[in-house]
Length: 104
Image (cartoon, one colour):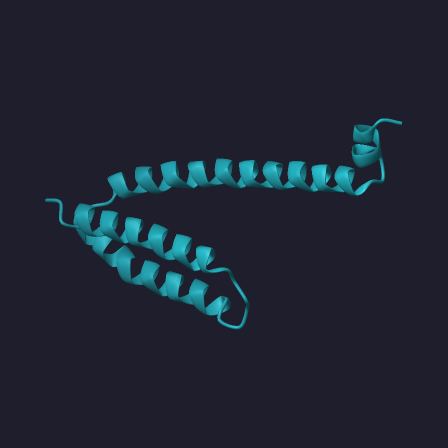
């Protein structure tokens, strides 16, 4: 039996690591696809709203972000999660503000 077969054969630690890596990559790809659809949806919705509607969305969105953050208060969540959440929230809030100031 060669070294590769010993490391990556069925039931080995290498095979388990390979399965985990493949499963993780597939999960990230699925999440990325869903996120791309949500980006397009949000962009399309924003363009259909007038300034008054966009300004009304902002406080509800802020409350939703605060609620999302509070759900992780008692959990050990990596800083990268909070960084990504706040970064994306700020992108959307900036877009809401810019589009909310467009003429009606």
